[in-house]
Length: 399
Image 1 (cartoon, helix red, strand yellow):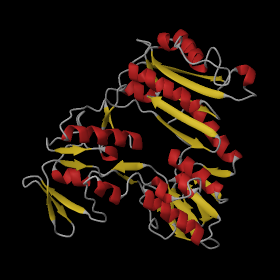
Image 2 (cartoon, helix red, strand yellow; image 1 turned 180 degrees about the vertical axis):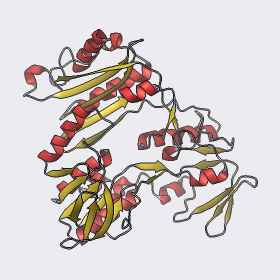
Image 3 (tube, one colour; image 1 turned 120 degrees about the vertical axis):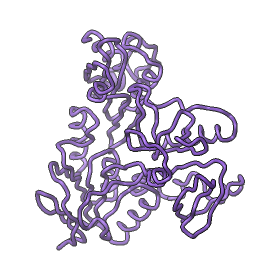
Image 4 (spheres, one colour; image 1 turned 120 degrees about the horizontal axis):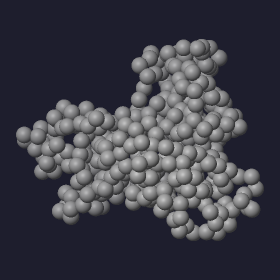
């Protein structure tokens, strides 16, 4: 949605994977704007808000996640938004155009906030990111968060740290005013980008088990604690192949895979969802930011003894780099030498390195293997010794 709001994607129809009409062509009936009030498991029926009951033999819950809002007055004011779905994106874009917005405030500093800051600057809005912490994207190493911060500032985004929202009020010389514990910020639009929580109300009311993450418990076939009910997507858990724990990672690629696995099992073609390693990435202006696996804190909680190192290399051969830098961090277990996680940041090459290291995590590779792994060498894409090789070798010596 940020790319639609920022006018990189011109037509919202390009964000619709399949229309109700396309579903109908395949024999799937779609009912929109209908709320499910309850699930009557003893009768095999779902109760709709209009009083109808639909029978089922097998049920799939895909209720997704809901955007987090701070518990402060004024969040329902016209001009205050969250961004979770296509309708949110359309509403934000229409609001900006209709009201000729000049100033915007984003509350939060995760990767949706970063993408939105770029989108709003693309529309020439004065953009401020308000965050209660010190640096953006707290899941990344502070060294890399500093790089992200510099990218924001270099592109005209004001980063206001150590400010927590207190209220949303009517503005005096703008449409709105964000009141924080440190002062007031006049703005035309406010976007709350504070993350999401799994939407499990219906599942919990039905008696389905939820996990430590707060999401719906499923097994590797996507079955819930009831044999006939499956759950997929942002509302349910996934097995993390590195931490060996069930987690909730609300990303579209995971949801798509879980949906296919559930569909196969329901249709009688058994399949398991093999889990995740936590790969994720985002772009902010010219910067690629990516990570996979565990950071040190999570690794310790998972029973490992982690050690990490950051090395700055180049995304291409040094002779062709022109001063480009690529930062890569690896984290490994001191006892076994196994890779546990990786992070990268750079104006090119960061995501490709993390994709490689995600495959390494998936396969359970150690630093000794990664340090001499066969990669496609060509000066425009990396050196004979890629930064991946270098970091793996240096970290192995450190262990």
